[in-house]
Image (cartoon, helix red, strand yellow):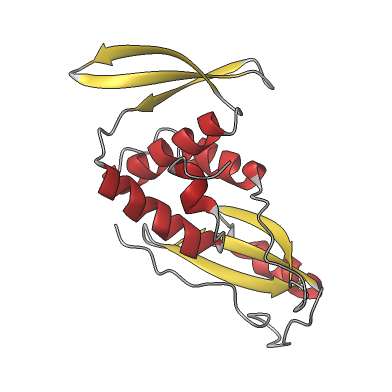
Amino acid sequence: MEWEIKKSSNGCLFCNKEFSEDEEYYSALFDENNTFLRKDFCTPCWNKGKEGGPFSFWKTKVPKKDKPVQTFINTEVLLDMFMRLEGNNETHQRNLRYVLALYLIRKKVFKLKSFKRENGEEIITLYYPKEDREFDVFNSNLKEEEIEAITSEMIQLLNYPYLEREVLGTAD
């Protein structure tokens, strides 16, 4: 599965109003024919924008030009994506869920509980203490370059420039 990767736009998809510095707007991912498309909406147009049933969405802000790039990653958005991918057996989306799990383990959102084999596949059981809940994730046995490729797609899709270093364990 290939994603149409689009960084945040300069303006609203509906009204074409250009976003100004420090303005809040909504970004949403839409699953269209097994392809994630990113669309951005100004706050007044957001209700029209979410009518298509976004896969995931978040509120963001145009950074100030003199301010350094924000390094905060909204783990709630990644957690939401992880949960929505549950039960999806399409290979690329299973791989995405696996990479999201790695990141959420690293950020201590999930705790590693156990490993088991089922139908010849390794399954990792994760514990989510906040909701006292467990999740099973198929170990995709991805090579490092495959994890890097999926992470790179996520970086571009979500416009999180620091995600790659964090998933791959090279950031503090």
